[in-house]
Image (cartoon, helix red, strand yellow):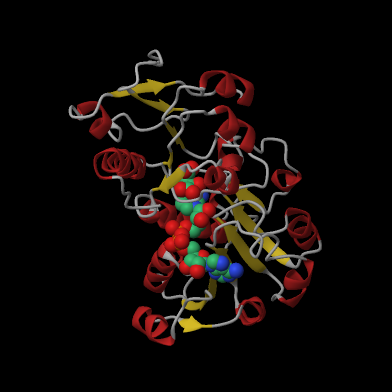
Length: 323
Ligand code: NAD
Ligand code: MLT
């Protein structure tokens, strides 16, 4: 649905550039004290977005739209960028700051969904569920190839122990796994409280049977897992990435799987997305989903409600909850 951008000075043009839950943007629709004009126009190329953005006051995105410096420069009226989700790596934060534009995200709304997806991916990886399903759908009843491993008594390394990492650890404990956790801000007290053991990334590499990453993509986390780290790992380690492509070096992961060091990987995210033609997808040991970690009805509604409320708060009070 596209409604027109308004140029009247009292109108606040809220431009939604990625598909968002209609229930989630209900707060914007029902707001009557502000003159909000909600425009939904998704799937635009960068050039098309630049052509439309001049009169936009608020830009609302998920992860598909890359909010580049060029887009920000063209957005003469832009005051706020809302990210319906956690990661703000698709937004040029330096350019936004330089132009005095506030960026808000929705840090809590998809935690549970992302954690559940991670556990689903880990279990699927351990039991070859996608591969066996694929074979059976193609008429092959193969009970030999798809012998898996149990999670019970295995060691899970969680790197990045924020909201999602901690929820993943909590669930993994329910699977009776031992959990090692690394996060620069993880205290002994918090680790004890959650029944996990604090460890370094190197200690995790040496000891873990499964490693899952839950950090943002930052200069310090880009290629955090590379050739050197894979070399330290146990033979037969399994890797899960439901955080961001690039935290695990994709070429090095490919080589580690081909060499037999890594028994398998479960990937929800890729360096370049969409990733339909990726060499990792050619490996039978790799299972994958197309960035579905937060794709539940509940999470999508929740993140959209959170950013919608922050937009309203900004225009009513001049402050935001999740800058
Ligand atoms: P969070 O901010 O609660 O946790 C991130 C943690 O990473 C923090 O505790 C931080 O201290 C830690 N960290 C930062 N640098 C680190 C480093 N060098 N080494 C180890 N840990 C480091 O965020 P969250 O809600 O747990 O989300 C984590 C990431 O997951 C997001 O940034 C986003 O990119 C990704 N995500 C993906 C999906 C999906 O759909 N696949 C959904 C939600 C979030
Ligand atoms: C996020 O960072 O919240 C996730 O990538 C989910 C998404 O918005 O697609």
